[in-house]
Amino acid sequence: MKRVKIRHRKGEAGFFLLELLVLAGILMASASALAVYHQSAALERENMLRVAAVYLAKQEFAELAALSREGRLAPGAYGWLGEEAPVREGVEFAVEAEVRVTEGSDGWRADVVVSWPGHTGGRTASLQLEWEWYEHETTG
Image (cartoon, rainbow, N blue to C red; front, side, top):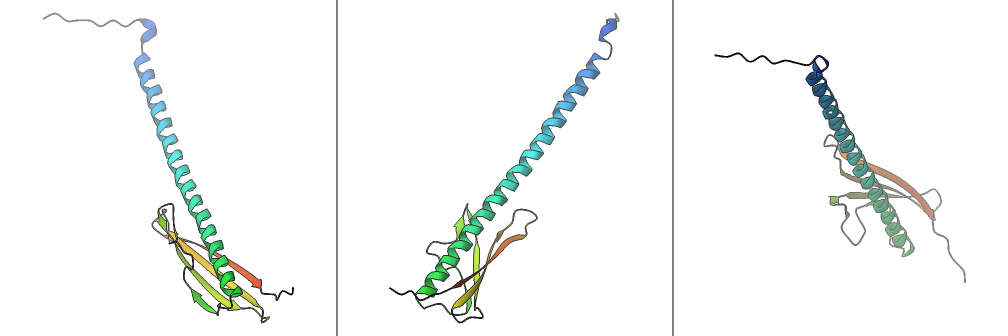
């Protein structure tokens, strides 16, 4: 049996190890970039849901003000008053309002809580806004 001797040139010793180290570095950088992108996408979605919650709360305030102008608003708890179901971006929101009379007899105060299933840790995310308004008689 004949033995084959592998000869290395002097300048190529350790070059294969260097290639492996460079490849491992590129792979690690790619994996960390993917993790950063995933985190960024999750934060963008949470922000989009928060903006949708603010929109729904403002819509609930508008519905409460309309009831007030019609003389049909009473102190107490209200659910969603909008015409469409409170579903945005494929997520179902829960909207609840608590209405109270202010110190003056012509004012109202509403606290609206909008909640939705959160994606971080399975917890529920929520947003609470409050608004105070006064009805004035118009002459004319």
